[in-house]
Structure formats: structure tokens, C-alpha cells
Length: 438
Image (cartoon, rainbow, N blue to C red; front, side, top):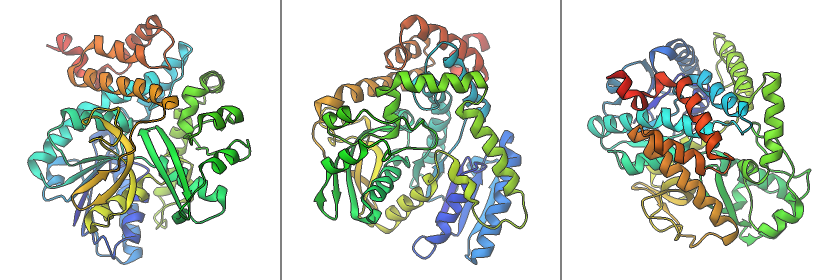
């Protein structure tokens, strides 16, 4: 087997390598190619050296290749994973700080920040999909890159390669947290997930085959028993609201149901110069100093401080399930194909799927509860119009996408923040400046 990881200089790569090592008996990867761009060359070499030490310590027959030549890496690939960040963390800092200047939430996958990460990322991912289709047409593209919902939407609607799966660690994180809450093994918990990336709901929870949804909701109503993530303020839910809604919320729902409180937290961080992006940049610098240590031969525990911790390990599980035709159930971003009846078949949704050698098969959930359907439809509209803006370079589509997002309070503010973010990211948005560049 050959796996290619684009964005191989990411601080998450050691977790990916660890996941492949521990599954080596069922997932015999002979070649792992780590690919990056010139700006990421130093990080690629640091991460690559650590990956080689990890493989050597584990005594597995896996060759680690480092390259900046993407097409060379793709030859005969079986799986391609994408975990890239166009503009690196400095771009994320702009995505967070500029919206906050205008008094609106700045976050890398939600609102204005999420739109601009999508605008920078989608053209690059579509080019990668085209290269996969030409160079290794039988390979699966497993995308971790955020905003995963909008990116997967674009890949499915506009991409040349059909074997695409979007992936997120959030459902895994929620399952683990609820298992801990119930004091049972995670393997004994099954949650029926449905919605969109970073807007997924747990419709039903089963513990050892018995439905326990209401019991879990009651427990989550206790401020001491929240499902939280390191990158989102753990503001407790209002208990009556949680019980009335009747479904399990994910941590990212706080951006929509607790906008005022989250914005207040972010403004404090903004004023003190410690937004999440700046905190992540400092943590990443710390991680790479650790990675440089020639005696380090394992993933350091500090990596778990990143909000996306466990992404890579769960992705290894997905790759193994496809390769081995396991038929197990995982929560993935895929083409709807009737899973959520109120969505078009071609739209990307996040639902439980049976994972087979032919790829994930989404499980039908019918209509979403009326209490949550409206918000999900609104965010899907945002994703679709945002993806179209990324593909066409349309200023008007970008403005509409931003204005219909519930985290943007007015069209006037949308235009102001759009204009400033366009200028801030100009070098990464050639489609929006083609007339100027002509």
C-alpha cells in the first residue's frame, strides 16, 4: 500500500504515523509520502525525521518519503489524505482578528473566518482532486482540511474525482465524552449522528443497545457534565433549552445558540492579543521544538492540546475500514444520496455510514427534527454559495454567502469585513483579483 499525505509538515502528522504503526498488521503501508509546499519545507523535514524515528522504533517496514513534488508523490497512491492550511497560521490569525474588529465572531470554520478559509482552500483542493484523477484514479481522497463541510461540498459538486470522503474528529470526540459520562466503554455507545460538519446533532444515543437519549440529555444539562473541546469556550447549556431541543448538541453549536457569550469570550481574547489562532501558533512552535529532539521517537502528549487531536488516528481507522471492507459504522462527510430527506442528493452531509471497500454508504435518517432543520438548512446555503464563490471568484457570491451566515449581523458589516479580508488574503485569492492580475 501507498499513502500520500498532502500537508505532511503539519503538527498532526506524528499522530497519523502513530495510527498507521499500530494498525500495521491490518494496514500494511509500505510507503508513506509526506508532501508540502516550499513555505512548509522546514516543518516537513522536522516532522519527516520524527516519523522515520517512530517507524524505526516500531520495527515496521514502512518507508517515509519527503517531497515538494506533489505529482511525483501521487504515482500509484492508494489513499491520499489532505490536511493543509493555505496561508498557514498567520492567515488564520487574520481570519479571527479581522471579524472581531467588526464585533462579530472570528473562527476558522464558522462565519467570516470559515468562509475565507474555504475561499483560499477550495481551489487548491480542486486542483489536487484533478491531479489524483489523472495520476492515481483509483485512490481515495480523505480530506481533513477545514472547513470540511464546505470543502467536501465543493469537491463533490465541482471536483473531477468522485472517490472523496470528508472527515472530522468531532463525532468521535462526542462518542468518547458520552461514554465517559455513562461510565461505559466507547465501543458500547452508538450515536445516530446527522447534520453538517461542525453542525452535527446526535439524534439518538444507545448504550449497550438500549436507547438512553433522554438520560444523556439530562446528564448534559448539568454544567459539570458538558461535552467540550479545547478550542471552544466550555459555556454551560441552559438546561431547559437542552431538554426541550431533545437532541445532543456538539461543542460548535455554541457559536449559534450562545453567540453573545462566545463573542464576549473572543473579544476578551482579541483585546489581550491571545486569540485561539495565536494560542495555536505558540503551541505549534512548542511542538516543533519537541519534534526536533533527535531522541524523541513517539507522538508527544502536548499534541492533544490541539483542537483537532485524534483526527489522524480516526482517519487511519477509516482507511483501514475501506481497505479491509470492514462494514463498520463511522460518521463521515459524504454525498447525501437520500440520507437526510430534506437535502438534495448531491449535497455533502455528515451522517453515519457503513464503510465498505466501495466506500462509505450513508444511512438514512429521514427528515431532521423541525427544531434543528432550519439552522442546518441555513448553514448548508452558506456552504453552497461560499463554495460557488470560491470556484468562480465572484465577489457578489462571497458577499451573499457572508450575509446569510447567522454569525454575521448585517449586510453592511458583511461587506466591510469581506473587503478587508479580501485584501488581507489577496495573494491566496487569485480568482478574486484576476482582472487586476490580467
